[in-house]
Image 1 (cartoon, rainbow, N blue to C red):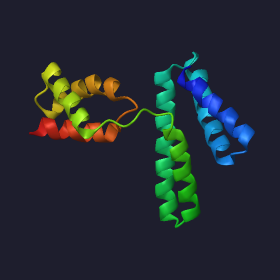
Image 2 (image 1 turned 120 degrees about the vertical axis):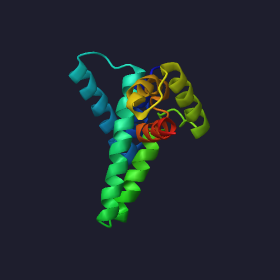
Image 3 (image 1 turned 45 degrees about the horizontal axis):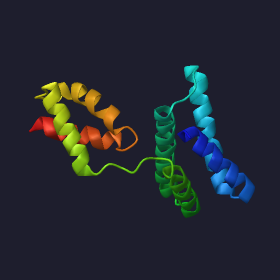
Length: 148
């Protein structure tokens, strides 16, 4: 069963159980997947679904920071609960040690020696860590390794 089917199955369970939060969250995720398929004019693969899930998670994180600025604890709790639902479908996050190992290997493989070579390293690293590590964190670590 692919990731899209798992999400759809969980959505059906939420509909049957009357779990409104899960129902709303998963409908939003499925809408994002459908929009991706329409935009690309192709069926989504698991890697595409992971991209949509990451986008949905990032959206919730941004909404939490906006809700904090607006002093809305009710919205913060809702967004956190939605994030927990979305994270069920994401692979476990990569440890920093694993990430550093992948980055160091990519730096060696690409022959990168300065921050100007950052693009080469990122091209090698990102496909390996997709859905498992935050792009900003990867960028920061690569930058710190290339500045030394």
